[in-house]
Image (cartoon, rainbow, N blue to C red; front, side):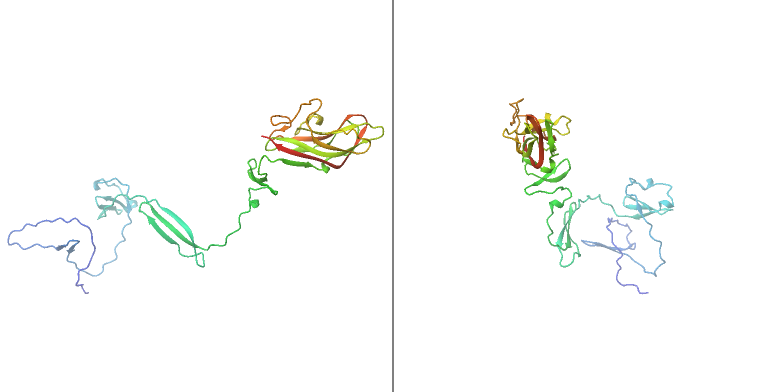
Length: 360
């Protein structure tokens, strides 16, 4: 076995050096246990050391379970009655670890813990950066900030694809309906979805009643005959109703003097009242020149009659005003206002137009 000539470094530790003088009588031999060299930046202690053969494998170091929350400051206050289940429990007292190994206490010098540090306020951001050919690669981390507020910015490689198509409004899940030319998109709060509609809520709405909605055709003897009964559902705003249209009728049989006019009236939707009791809103006057030939009656808006000659529509008037949300049933009535005899009605080319003029 060869013993090294040079000193062997075996470790270092910060120490507090105390100097003592060992008194001796004159003539006594010097007593030197070792040498200690002090230099400006370090102190070196050289000791005698014998290096022998390698010894047997030692027992593994016990697993420590430090009691960091302990308030014990005196070893005499350490708990009694510890057993095998407590092996590894360790208390740090005055610079030394007191470790219970299951049978006895072991005391070793420990480091002096410093005060708890600040909890860092960590923030992480990321951005996609263009990659050369593949979306996979090394993520670059750019750190910054302070110990208390560290920041990390991630540069993630990825391939940037071509620009996609714009979103199509008509294909959105919260859009319903087929828009017409000139319409815009309006929010329907009741249905919680977007729908096509007029850009202005004050736009006039126009409705027509076609020939197929009139009838039945035939010859009638009663004073009044309803030949059409369309319904207008409640609207989002109040409005005045304006009517127009035309239809055909003629006297039936010989010696017939029937004087027939056409009335347009309306009642609240679902009303059980007779149609002739509804509000008068349109009329085609009887033409005195009517003979046995077919007559074309031209319907115009009309609001007054002999029982109420002053009835008129105006900005401040309730006449003809249909309230917001109120549905109405409209009736087109053939009315024999004078003379005698029956009258024949043909649905051919019958027509009624309705304008809904919004009012505030």
